[in-house]
Amino acid sequence: MARSVAAKKSVKPAKSSYVLDEQVGFILRQVWQRHSSIFSRDIGTNLTPTQWAALSKLAETGPCSQNQLGRLTAMDVATIKGVIDRLTARGLTETSQDPEDGRRLLVSLTRAGQQLSEKVAPNALAITRETLAPLDAREREMLMALLNKLR
Image: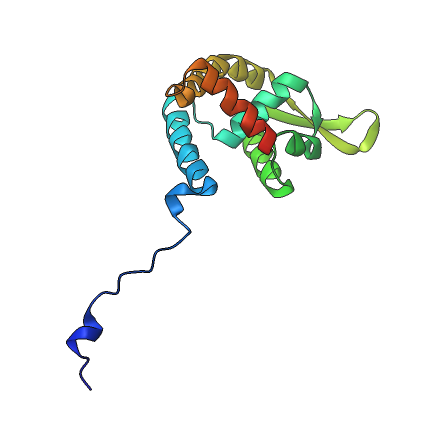
């Protein structure tokens, strides 16, 4: 049976109260995509954002357990394990037994990891500046305060 001409016409959707472009998750994803593009272009070495987070946190805190590092960098157990495995394979991190608890392994930076962290930190700061460049100083401060409040 052939469809009528009227049935083939596109139906204009009803006015929706949900507009994707106005949703916080959608906007945050677009901002993240922009930031990721800047990061990939400017980090200056072959590091992912999660690898940089682990390196920079270890440079900041010193050795810690893999689980603690995962919590400090907002990564789940599987993600932090993969990140540390890749960094260790590159000679940037190493593990050793915790002298206070022999059942636990500590993750620390190698000399190469420390040197890379120090070398890349200025690039990472520049990436943050470029990500926030469309905002004036007051807006940057307000955005960071609001994002921290949402954490």
